[in-house]
Length: 166
Image (cartoon, rainbow, N blue to C red):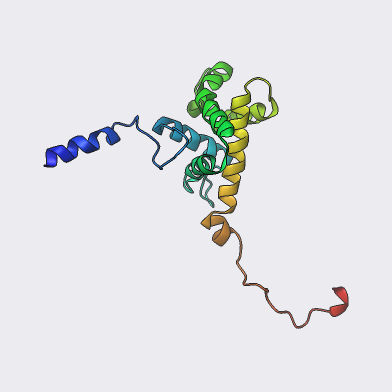
């Protein structure tokens, strides 16, 4: 019985499996998920004061949002851009994206976002990723509770506020 359970779980431990979250429309592998995590971490890096995109699971948020909220054309372009990311990084920098230093990664993403003609799928991938990573960060628990001081609506009452300045 234990042997049969081990055989059942073996394919999930191989490392080349599907994404760690359930997706209906996208077919993302573990390596592609890790690569998206690197891209998200480049956009919102971890600092001494704040968690990075990986700590907030923004790459998983991005995958879920693309899977649920984008049309099939955007999903296809996102997947093609994710697949071609390392190929284009190798052509431009002689290294895959995850082996580039932080400054080169930022320059690579900026140059790809500015140049829409060279690889449209990669440009679409970065546009969607940028939008969803920022959305995920601004809606994260960290941004909502630790960055902003929450005040109940209608706010605090100031009885000494001059009426003529309203």
